[in-house]
Image 1: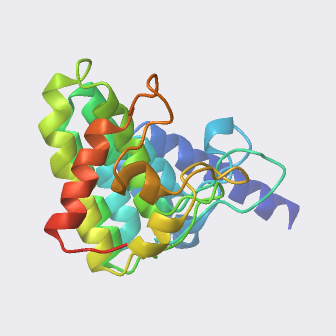
Image 2 (image 1 turned 30 degrees about the vertical axis):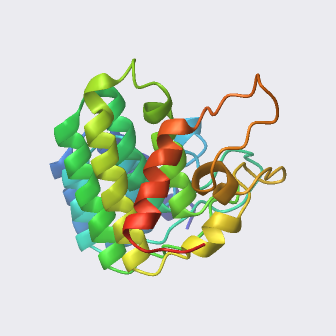
Length: 238
């Protein structure tokens, strides 16, 4: 029994290393022999992948061919890291695809953003839970908007990505809402991570900005304008 467990742990470590290195044939070979490893969980090292599934790691590292293979061979599309002693942020697989779609625009990797969005679409259409929450209380809409916020706030730093981030955020929101994402719950939920949620998303992004005094600046001006127009154009009321 000890030898079997040790062999399994070695294979688990091997599959995660192969994913990070983009070795598709090696991942395929391992899973052909041990198909149950499609939903194995990464060990403590490297720490940033602790507790994650092969699909999560494939999406985080941009190994989309491997991600596709994993999905087609039974990867859990609703996987989220288990709560344990690691205090790190835990989020559903879907959030990794969303993050890749948006963050790649910071580096002007527009083709990668398109590829990543294809996996947001694939996961949602295959039944990923669009209302599942991350460990910080964020839902998929909040995760999408928050991921895009940096690009909106720093338009002068990311001028070439402004059109793309609006396009991708629109597509993500459309997809989530069309598949049942509770945008009313999102609007009324606190914007910041639990346990200090702060003002609601509605007040941050939908309502008109009301300055506290003459020195108060609307730091969300561009994103607020986008979100207001988005909700107005889709006739969504919150």
